Image (cartoon, rainbow, N blue to C red; front, side):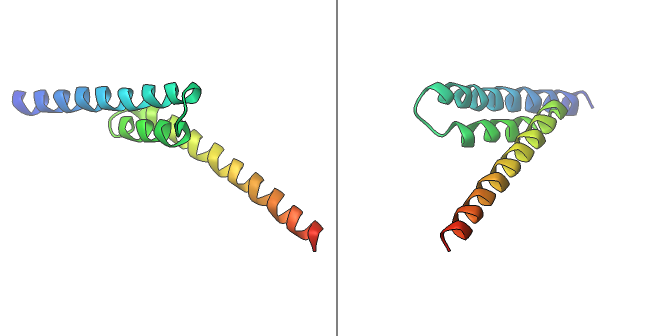
Length: 84
C-alpha cells in the first residue's frame, strides 16, 4: 500500500518535471525561433495526465486554436469568393 502510494507520487513528480520542462521550453520559443504553438500544447498535454489545471488550460488552448482556424478558413473562403 505504501509502495503503491510512493510510486504514484514519483510518477506525478516525473510528469510534473517533464511537462514543465517542455512547457517552459515552449514559452521560451515565443521569443526564440521555433514552433512554440506546437511545444506549449505538448507540455500542457503531458501535464494534463496528472493535473486538472493543465487539462483546463489545454482545453482553452484547443478552443482558441479552433477559433483561429475557423477565422482563417473564413477569410480564405471570402477571398476565394471575391476572386470568382
